[in-house]
Length: 333
Image (cartoon, rainbow, N blue to C red; front, side, top):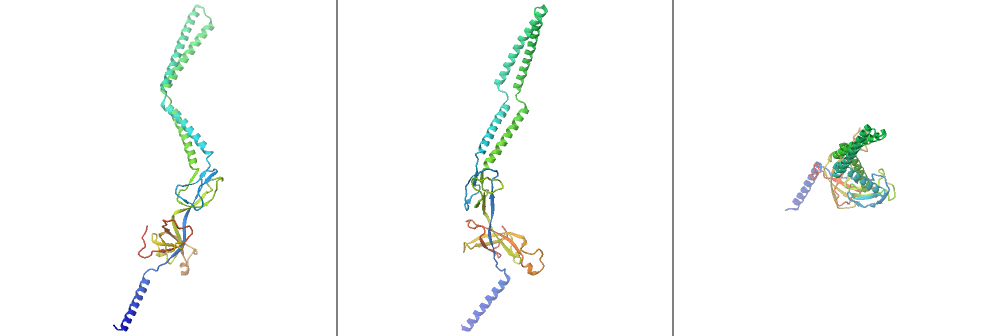
């Protein structure tokens, strides 16, 4: 094949490749990147009560698991109060059980014996009174002796009636109102115990989330309060990159779109992520936009959620985000 023909074919192929690249570049979306910083949620942990701090169990930079205890209060004064409340509950429980059980057979037998004795005394007093009546009719007794016998007979009858009523009460058992009152007192004692136990449990400050200790804000010996955090944590998950996109590129992003995140600390290593939030409000712009120059300066906040299974990303770390605007983009998550 002549050299001129080969040279012409090479030039033609190069021109065709250039035309194809130009057309595809013009027709397809241009790649763009976002820059921002890694963000973490921060949690400040404070005790619910006011007491002296006994110990702080973590140091700055320590990893903290969910429900891990990070600090404790002094319980020297609280523990006896819990024991007292527990004893009051036991006492009220015993009273309530006694009322619910009713009278014991021994109590009924004792009331019956008391009634029998009272009736015997009443019969003896009545016979003595009847003798005094006969003696008065014969004129062989004094009015004073007669009055004493009558009073003794009446008193003995009253005591017998009283013993009979006492037996009826013992057989009937406690009233419903007495049981209800004992139940209310028991519930009040148990509520007080629950409250004291909750205070004792609150003496241990546990982290509700997993994270890393940012700051120890209080030390043992200081007085804790609900308004003074003891420890500040940075959550391990979720993590995101806060970046900003210009108004001209805003239409190329949508929530759920895949993205690739990289940081300078780990060159050559990327992190999977996706667009989690696009602000509906522009920032760093005038209140009213009038010209095209101002319209192109609009900037919107974008949050890119990042998967970090190795927990290597740190708060404030600069990051680069490449949204997958081509076919690799996800419709959502």
